[in-house]
Length: 125
Image (tube, rainbow, N blue to C red; front, side, top):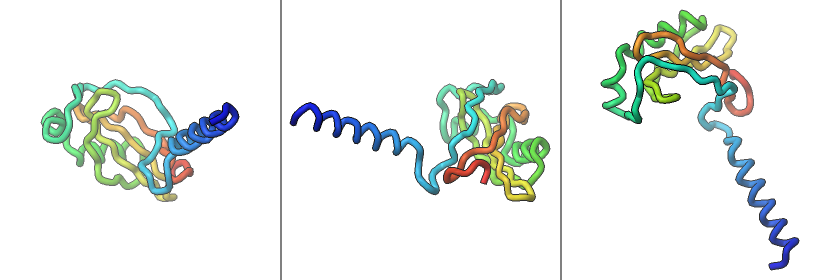
């Protein structure tokens, strides 16, 4: 294979990999903000049952905290580890349909972050 062909194929491969990193319709939400936060409960890589054992509040309390910060209807809070901390992630939908992702500390119920994620290329929809 000659040099121009190798360069062309290498560039094509790079373009395909880069394009794939932007996600596809229906994919999980992508943050429009990369703000870090500090929670009160370290995750230490815990998952599943171990993660639930570390949480000090439940999903209902996390949803209530999310709605207190961002008016609307909360979805079902999901217990996750993010930035090394045990947190709940919930989506609050405002009356106009705008969606905001809210991160709630699983230790004390404090809202740590909120932003409008990007779904299918549209912020907060």
